[in-house]
Length: 461
Image (cartoon, rainbow, N blue to C red; front, top):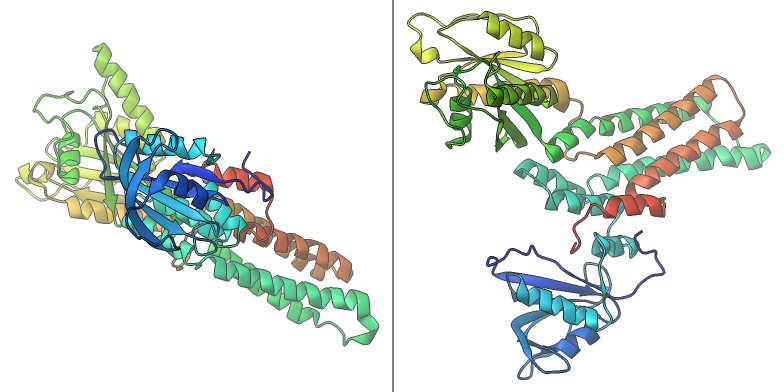
């Protein structure tokens, strides 16, 4: 359970990745009322350096009891409210690796600081009003971004580009609620409510929410990436395709069928979308026990993929084995890759299949057709995911669920108006919509929701 507003003790954590024998700098972050006191106890700044906010001091970290030198370091001081958490914050910038930062952290904990829980620094920033909930979630997205596009969308959220329209929607709902409730309490003193105008306003709200909802699939795609499986019978050039695409020799390529015995993975970025490419073992009937396991894993990879690249040999044409594999994967998003076209003496073969999204011609061994393959993948993804909205941010699953509740509540208000029910009934669902929108930015949020969000952060953030 994450701490509540009343638990404002001093916390400390390592704020950088710890890699043995690597990393030039390691940072220990401390936030809370005792942060400066801890820094003065542990850090010794030679000369006449001034201890004031937003200064970087040079000096030494020593054990407070024994005086043992722990590290030569820098100390960053950020006093409230001009800090990430809006509390007093200090950061010990130590030498990287493992030992120095671990020793400094232990000294901070010995000085009555508490080890921070995952996301607790950002939680304090939210509780202290420095960030709203969409900005806090954007920080986690930025840290975990797998592509430049994902980082760009995270930065847009951090700058408030999602929070602003959500607050505007909520404000409009509050204005409508005030108008309706005024008629409930002071109907005789006010002019009649323009029900048509209220209904039109709610129609506009529903449409705006639907547009923002349309970014959910794009957001999920940018955060988690696209899983693509290369499948086909043995020796059609699947491994050559992976190597040409990833510009590496991830997979072993020979003229012998069945060389690939297991699923080989490669991480790529296509059009800003992270792509996990799975080169699978050739699918065929076999008595080889090891190869049979590989074939079964290939089938599982194909069924778990977002997109399947069914690769066939242009020279051999469409075989019975190709047809059998096609029947196994045609329920997925499917691109047909006709490989080895450089070995064709005549024009390109035409394999038209009913359930194929795109057809691409390649000569993977000569790096031909890779750009066309990436274009086909993006076109397939765009057709299914990315055309629902044209906004420069993308919502996550939690935000999408809250938006759906808000839209449903507003649609219920529309039905209430159509049924000519009393004004009191209008306000019930309108309040539900306001609560749902408030959950997105954190204006109305429970401790359990905060616990779920911030527990996914790393400890030092």
